[in-house]
Image (cartoon, rainbow, N blue to C red):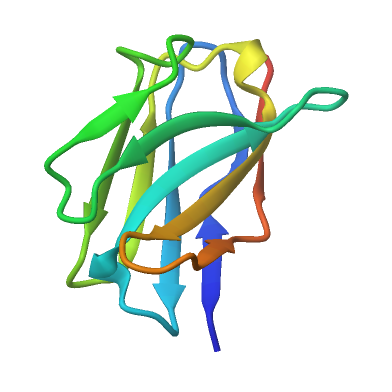
Length: 118
């Protein structure tokens, strides 16, 4: 059974930090590109960051570049999103996504709420 379980969301202060985790199971994690997306109320889901299957390459949305860092630990089947310098506009539900590099398989997590407010 495939599972992507996000955790680490919650209330963050402007300028503060949060670290999201996404634990994967049920598939060969190291064969998948991993991404974080977010969706704010009334807005479309957008790509935040993406990391290649062995972690050598990462890409970021312009809005988070220099503040957020995506990483992965293939031994733990987990991808992370370190969020520093939080802004109120970072408030959204954050989703983890797995895309196979060899097949058409795509998996999504259930999402975790991040709220940035003083």
